[in-house]
Length: 519
Image (cartoon, rainbow, N blue to C red; front, side):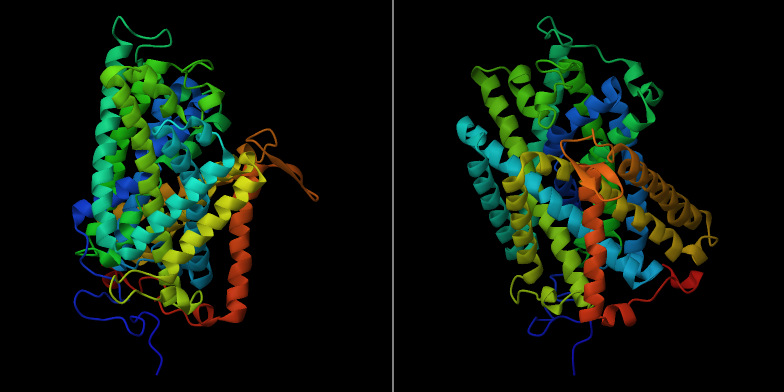
């Protein structure tokens, strides 16, 4: 007799802490889950790669746009919290969307997670490669595409190996990396603010002003939307805390709490850094200005020497800032592998993709094929894009915002629909399971549609554009983002033909049958 779709794979011990699918249960507590959620967003890397882009779009309103992007993230975090209480499955959006809307929608939700993570891994590897060489003073190698690509591949291999060995080692590494990262970011922010108000302030320095926090001063709706999509990217990743729910103690409550706590902590970190960096460097298009297009994709490396200085202890801190961005990218590389591997693991456990992806290591109790496949797919995508063009790589990173908005928004709608018969049970249920997730889903739907079909579709947006039959010339960001999602639809149809049991007989109940059935 074959094993049930959700039973542990053959040969995996079911005792000694093995969970329902064979993963190591109870390995993580609340602190480790919060650390994984924070580290997954890679605060230093995300700010380095995104703050300049936000400033170019919205100017002095960058701090308020950074704060406003927190709102849909917090609302969707509540959706994750409520859905995880009903079904702590490591497939997250895949399983929950299937429960709410059926197997095909669930499959596309899982694909949204996979494609966003694979795309962002290319940029994470690139940043890790570049900063690794800069850290040791090898700037000539940092400018070489071949050497940075090679170093990036090595980073992916190393982080994949750590994820393969075990979730506890991954969590322990995240705690140390995150501690260094947060300390240096706070030190950078305080130093920048103090210097901006001192007699030694640079010519670019401007005092903090209340108008920076007025969203109505943003130049246009399209600029606001582009800025929000870019800012949403810096919050992305906290859901990793929920993706490892089957390996967390009190899996029905702890992951959801960790997700909400992570987003709130990120708000304070990002608001502090964005405000202090803008006060110190200004938003000019020259020199260290945050609007300088020459370093819009990496603002922190240019600001390190200016804030800390180039001699004595300041030089040490400047190098530490580079190390921080490097470790941030490395940590995010690791925590990007974790949720993707567990998404494909869950999909395979439910027979939505080939069952080989559901294999678990008998000793480490981590997904084997899923983890290795994520590493290989990331390496292949990264090498392909760098071989084609650095411009294509840049636009692919911008397209990640569409994938994020897609599966986060879908999770918000899934929460409302799954609990629809339980919403009138109490005010708490109406707000927590209905109003908040619905508001988050609608916000992200708007940003997805306006970004994909207006802002990003403009041929002049981004670094590339493509001529499409009938449609004409379209911005590369839209083509990559929507093309990646449409590829998922094709693969879903192929999977249904080759192994269609999930689509014909999904093994998850669809919707809460009645209010009493929903926790």
